[in-house]
Image 1 (cartoon, rainbow, N blue to C red):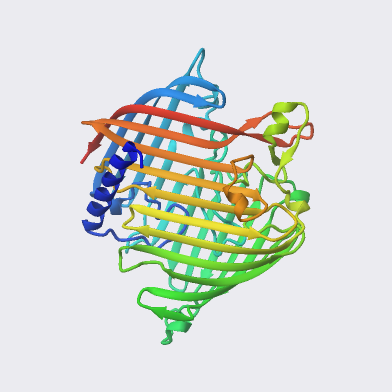
Image 2: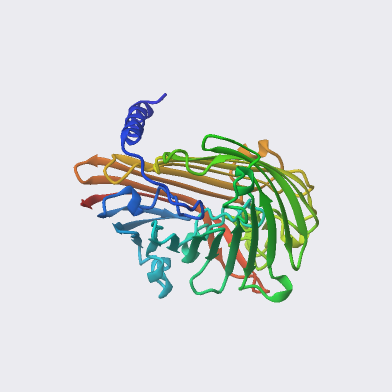
Length: 454
């Protein structure tokens, strides 16, 4: 173990113990989108009114160029409302155009603006770039996000409403309503039955469509699913489920599995483990609306990096288009643990057994105790286009999204803020108007000052 790691590990353990010893915060009733994201500053984790402001500067590496940069991050909370803002300004010989080259960049300053549910108002609503949004068992929408091409990110909206017997969820990838929109309704028809098994019966319907695509290539889709708790022990339940999904212009798929989970583990956290088996027909890919959908859809493709650097006039696409998917069997595994709204571990693996390279995985590790703790970090990696489980451990290629964030208290109000991304940049469109994206690396080690207002 290196000296740096030897110093870092005791600090991690001490901070985690301090978090565990604190009074547990109540979880919201929604496990949807960013509703329980520990990286955001919902009122349940802070005082009734709080604010945190960080200003920083330092070197900025984007693509193949180094620049100088300055920026800020601000988090504010009051009552059920909270707001997060974030901005960067980079310069070398000239300003980096992508920071502020159109009016929409002003909206991109919003990291999140959210309303959290209260006992009097069981509504969750959020505006900001969408991250890791899943609907139901993920047959159509799995870990969807709008931040894979950072300079092209859109500011979307997500909302949820809980009523007796029914829960309604919805999202739009852009508040201008010109892209992907979707919704889900979950009905618990026997919620007040005497039998706990009948109470747990839940039927869900999901619908998704991309308003930005023409009718002949539209990825309009719907799904139906049902589940019930076969067995309960304490806060945990073992719930089998079944799901059917179909694209109106493409193919269909069905599947099922079993989930062992607790959505509210005695007020201390959440845990869930799911195993599923899915059969897909031709022109169907489970969880198509994922982290790569904004750069890999019927009108957008990822440019094979090796081919790009050999000959920029020849386009070679990476990935399997929905219209060319051959179908087949896939096995999925999902695991997520959220403890005290401060520590999160989540992973998803889908081993695809078709002739297409469609094996994929995600991993997310977060430690974000609170504004007064000496550090927090985030590590996320999402992969697709692999051929086997073991190929998930190969080098990163064209279908990978990676995120690493670290905030570390240096001395007094001084903080080290590292932001690193492996995502995509927009290149010139193809002759037919097809959007093309190329892998891009970003690294920004900034030093600044953080002020917390009680």
